[in-house]
Image (cartoon, rainbow, N blue to C red; front, side, top):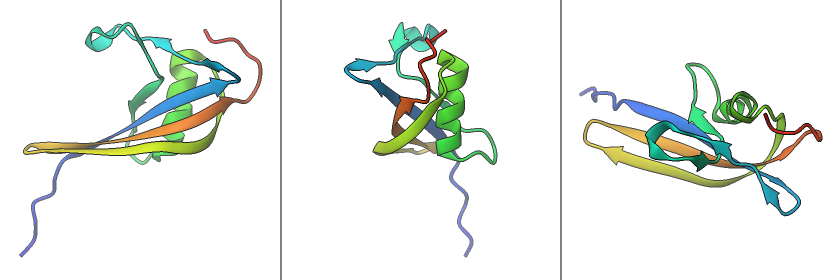
Length: 97
């Protein structure tokens, strides 16, 4: 018997570290003023590619992913959310936008 697909949304969150400093972006959505670069993966995009893209879009910083800090799975009756929290470092010394 076939199972009904569960709608699932995939998000990438990026902890960017340079020495003893961490990158935050000003995020006015959802009532949060400052947050780590993050966003939903687009159709056909890997979570790693989404992490790099979101950091570039939100902060203007090109990064190299160096690890995964956490994978979170939050199932709900109407769907699920998966978040991958990546660790990254800037590729160059460009300042954030």
